[in-house]
Image (tube, rainbow, N blue to C red; front, side):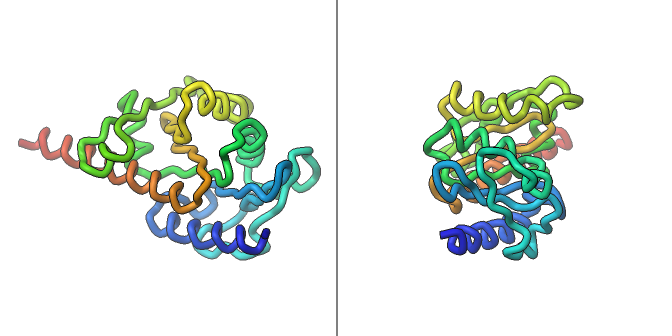
Length: 193
């Protein structure tokens, strides 16, 4: 089971790295193994070359392994603990989506695929970044539950998403990033006319 999940994570991580959704050491991706355990990338994982040793299995009860895991491990843990439907979780920082989130409070795609699959997404404002990681583990899963969504765009931070299908996660991020790229580009063209 772990080997199959690791293979899926590595394949999607490479694809997302090539699209600039992950940085060299920036981002996180995980898969739920069983009711109280999940597989996540380690803190220093390089996403275009993920190996088995770059992934770590964690239990919900925190132990020494959390120090090796991604800094997002506690956020993933809280999502898995509180949202039954979450089988895979990803945090990414696509550049157009993240830059768009700095200026606007919602994303309303004007392209066909964005409109058809996403419609509109509110952008969550964490207010201040100084204590974001202390609050994030609670605020993110609470946002998902309160808003009945599996996609959360966070101002200046990026996107968290979960799904039962890891490929759907990559697809959602790609559609949103492309929509934001088109919105930014069309806005620039309009201003230049």
